[in-house]
Image (tube, rainbow, N blue to C red; front, top):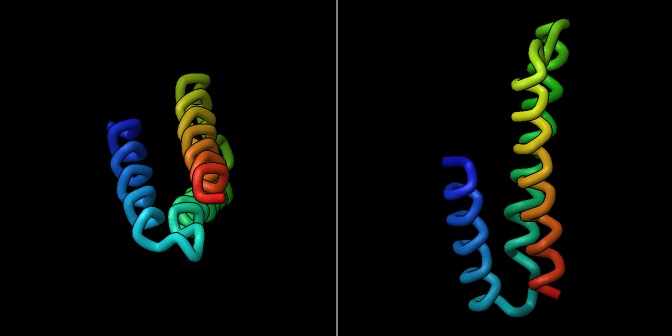
Length: 80
């Protein structure tokens, strides 16, 4: 589900970029998603001392973080 959501967001952002050639809109959108994800991780980590709690949860948080940042980086490269 997460991959399909990121793919949908990336496709939408790319369509916006194709319409708006003057600014890297996709990067702004996905960069905002990455910043929001960082804030969510911070808030959860600060409120739960044992976060992420298990190796599986740590792997999931790491994977999500990687995918979000990779999507933002890809959008920056594609829109430049």
